[in-house]
Amino acid sequence: MNLLTNTVGKKILMAVTGLLLIAFITVHLIGNLSVFAGADSINAYAKALHDLGPLVWLFRLGMVALFAIHITFGIQLYMENKAATPDPYAIEKTLVTSFSAKTMIFTGLIILAFLLYHLLHFTLQVTNPSISAVNLPLDAASRLDVYSMMVFSFQKVFISLIYIVAMIALLLHLAHGISSWVQTFGLSTGPSQDKVISIGKVLAIVYGLAYIAIPLFILARIVN
Amino acid sequence: MDLTLHVWRQNGPEDSGKLETYKAANVSPDQSFLEMLDEVNDDLIKKGDDPIAFDHDCREGICGMCSQVINGRPHGQQEQTTVCQLHMREFNDGDEIFIEPWRARAFPIHKDLIVDRTALDVVMQAGGYTSCHTGGIADGNALLVGKPVADYAMDAAECIGCGACVAACPNSSAMLFTSAKVAQLAVLPQGKPEAKRRVKAMTEAILSEGFGNCTNHYECEAACPKGISVKFIAKLNREYLKSMIPSSTE
Image 1 (cartoon, helix red, strand yellow):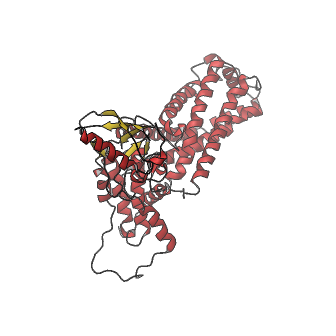
Image 2 (tube, rainbow over the protein chains, first blue to last red):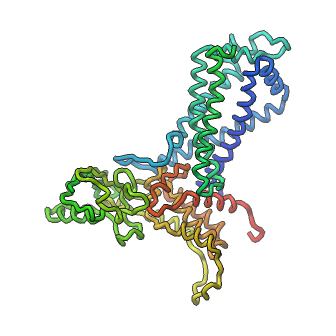
Image 3 (cartoon, chains in turn purple, orange):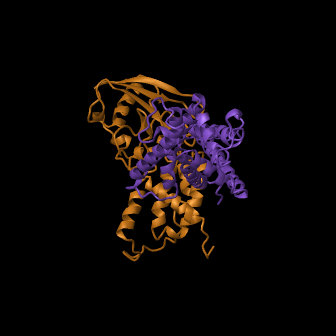
């Protein structure tokens, strides 16, 4: 049996990588929400991450692998499913599936495009050098001033808009993804199915809104 | 009642096919959908036209032959009902009805509403059986099966292999069909010894036969005339995960 070519094998790979990516966005979110606790809090968090040294790179390599597997198989599944589906019905009717389930490939690609921008923006800091932490004065504790970089960035409507749109895509992606892995790991039993789907959607909204809150609150000058 | 039908007409697998419009006059609400089509065909034959080709056999809802997508829904709008058991009382005078064949790459269209469902047979042949000697009839109750297990297997065995799950699936996947067979046999003593080999072989056949992958839309369950639950797909996934653990006898 080959996990890479079998239809269920690929599904399991999508679920395992998806679940680990959910774990990542959970940690990332908790870290980022420290922006609401003030400059000292998030700058300390950023420094703590940087001070991990080689571990950061190990983590980054792991993330690249996760994303690569998830994206490659996601695109492959989409292509195979497209090929299996001929001309549409004259009357297209779906009963139970959701908008988010039908648009996984598109929300996924939006998230990928965003990810590249996000890395250029905050990690490599090349899109807006004038307000990048590497070019801003260090904070009072002589750490990189990540807080100011975030605030200056999200005060720009265009940048905030990119983040908000991308996080809406993430919300939609998670609305199908979170409940989907429960089924893929064979944990659904029938009666629990509807509850799992509902919990997945609620969690997706929580993630989406929490992430959107960061640019939105800065844009609205609630955080500055 | 009088109805307007838009029926998919296609001469063969290579033909492009198109929707043709027909009138069905004086339809009785007590007729089944297939009986209504029989009368439309009688009129077409009298006029010297080619009758609409459609599959049917038992006409009592258990053979799984009637493969028609009616107004965008496999087997029509009535839940857990095959086309032969769908009655015209479900429609209203003056309704326009769109009748199309199952659409999936794995199901080439033979003619009009008849599709070739050999691909499902191939999936079955890959592992939907038990290998056992069929000598004398076993003594009753010699092989004990618990009631919950028997019920579970029976629920899965309700699948009539009609292919509505494939027709309804946005990915044209045959996962619900396959899972019903895998789940049914995996829980019974006769099927357990081959459970690992079966789940691997049957899931391999899904893609090789041109079906798509399951991405958990659950349209299959909603369209199934026998109400097969997607919990059997979860069971198949579980069986697949179990099959990855090598056993000491392998």
